Amino acid sequence: MELLSVRNVSKSFKDHNYKVHAVRDVSFDVHQGEMVAIIGPSGSGKTTLLNLIGIVISPDSGEIYVDGQKASDMNDAMRCRIRNQYFGYIVQDFALIEEDTAMQNILVPTLYSKHKKSAREYREIINNMAEKMQISEKLKSTVKNLSGGERQRVAIIRSIVNDQKIILADEPTGSLDKDNSKIVINYLRELADDFKKTVVIVTHDLSVARQCDRIFNLDDGILTPFKL
Amino acid sequence: MVVKQIIRDLRKEWSWALFYTVVATMIAMAIVFLSLSFSSVLRESSAIQSFIDKNVVMFQKKTVHMVPNREIVASANEHKQDPDIIMDYLQRSLSRNGNAGSFVFVGNDGYVDSKYEQILILFGQYSNLTGLRYDGDMALFVPDTHREDVGKEFLISGQSLEVIDSVGAEFNLFHPMHFIDSDNPMMWSNVLILCTKDFQTVDKMFPWWELSNEVFDRLVLVNPSNDEIEMLQRMFYEQFGTLYTGISTEDFKQVSTSASIRGHRLYILFYVLSGVLLLVLLVSNIIRVIETHVVDYTVHHLYGAPIRTIQKRVGGFVLALNILPIIGILYVLFVNYMMLWYFLPLSFALIVGLCLFAAMYASRRIGTMNNLSNLRRDY
Image (tube, rainbow over all chains, first blue to last red; front, side):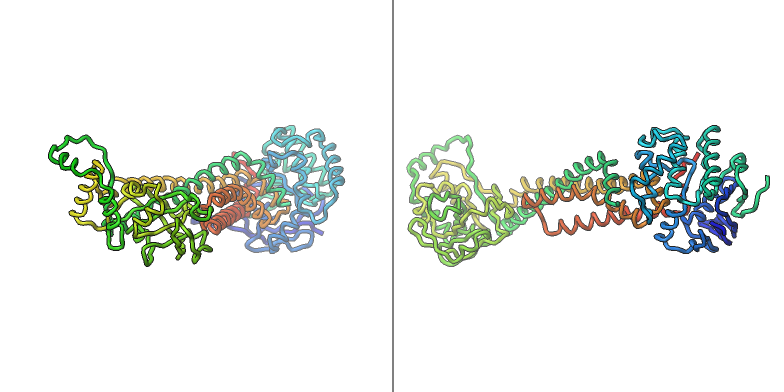
């Protein structure tokens, strides 16, 4: 069964006097353990599509199903609950709270979890992941003292600390150098292959897109399969 | 959890919170103090107007260098100070049919209950000028804080006098050279007021106070004729050898209180503008704080915090930021008897307004079309 299903979704918004169709009648499915890339030029609607998939906003028309649940017309509280349970987010500039420590940032999703674990359990989970990503000694450091690569790894751990099944990544390597970009993409690949996480990456970098199982092209709001 | 987040937000903005608390308290106190001071000036102005309407002329002794006119000096020397003339003048002019008035404060040297530290004696027309009415030649009034003594009889130097009423909460004592406002509780809470139209009797009741000297220091005539003024000045010069000049209240106002009122208006305008600027800065800073923390709020929203939770967090932060200076201001006002009834609801409305604004702004900023764009820097 598809973990994520998007059916005829459209979204537009007003920009001064113009109506901009950010997403037009988009449909696609993503299965569990799949890594999918969405590429397209700047302003093509990729971030809007990601907001829709992540049920941050509701579509003007169409439906979005998450693990069989119709999430597109839920109220804000329900959408928050679904997001907390299913989605992790990785963005270009890491989206970390600079004044907090890496550990505090990673724990943010656990604050709103309906199935809270104990503090000890969370510490154990986080320590295991941090060790795997080689940032164990950085957990107590403030984020502003971390390098770009370390920050992105903290963001990755945060995106799965609640055992979220879907990772949405918006230009995850945009702020990283070549080596760190490779490391991050390898981690995401590992999450998909070994931990059966579903990964949706928005990128304009074809070398990143090549690492994925499927590639879509979004141009002027229209999604089409992309073949290399 | 929201409370913990609010406390963390406050810790991050502690320096601004402290700065704002100090500045807001200072400006608010200055505005309140000036407005109350202005109220006092307005009350004084109102009392002055009442004196002007009644054409009250006040008198002042003046020391001048004068070349003696030998004829008048010779004539004056024939009339050495005659206490009977002075007493006769005071008895006539301060009676029910006279048009003079004055007032004197005497200490309560065992005359009445020791809770009254002073006795204010209002002679002649002065009781009318202060709004106190009574029949007979003498009457006692108590301050509003001692209404329980109304109806009681006090024995003062052999005179049994009944307290006929309290002076009321708005009682003030105006003389062009003195003004004791009604909101001076320290002054009015322990003063017994004796009104009299019989100067001689009262003079005998307080023999060692030399009341006539003090009476002349604050003597006023109500709607006098020129002849009456001349007669008084001549009598004064002949009896005391001192120039005794009269000035109408209207003329006095021109040189004194008008400038005071203008000055107060300017101060109030300055502090009100400062208050408005402070409010604008406060709102701007609330926006700045939200913009600074938009990543924080967006991340929490993305990872499961409903918009309502974010609104509570932001609203709670604004509440905590403003509650301390507001409580501080209200407390200082309360202990200084400056608390007016509308301060509390006004403060409450202001804080609620700011909290609602902050909550609405945050929700508009977070729940936008491109939420994830909040987390990106544009390159």
